[in-house]
Image (cartoon, rainbow over all chains, first blue to last red; front, top):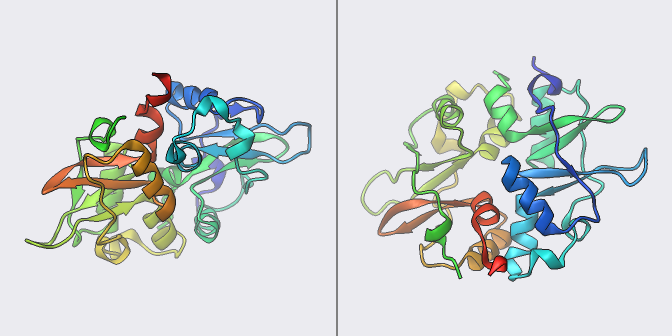
Length: 126
Length: 128
């Protein structure tokens, strides 16, 4: 059975909670990613996540200017994180139970990101 | 203000509801897609949508074999449709209200698919 560490994307893009939403959009566009991990302010503090859906639902839907919002205004923090040794099936269940699409992989620091796309394309759960 | 047709992906990949989820996974992997539009079964029938989350939540999380599940068992049909003339803001609002990430763009026929990805990446209104 495949584990999170076998299917995750190891190169993670992070952003600061104090960055502007317009910067987050620029980073996502440039790197073709659907979400950014928000760095903890200090060691041992929780990770956060900001996704395309956060931007579409909370900024664009209200015709707001992304330069007027910070990442911390729309992010989810603390977000659900997973361990590298979790099985693919359990990640799928965790995602289903909480209605989420991706999560940072954390084990003494940020190891990667795992998403529904990773499970679909590399999970091989059957 | 941009509309759905300005930001949509016109190159849509469709699947039949009678196909297996294994076929859908192959198609999504091969074409690097996060969703497929499910074709209507006949005249007057609605379009459907199959997303990655349908596959992960309803097949992988249930430890089911994708070869033994049909698209018709896990798809959303009828799905929420977007008109090509809807503004990007209205599309974002529709998505937020219904908690969806993508929808087919339809006016008489299937024109494309619009997703949160397109909304965030293609929208330029604040740069005017």
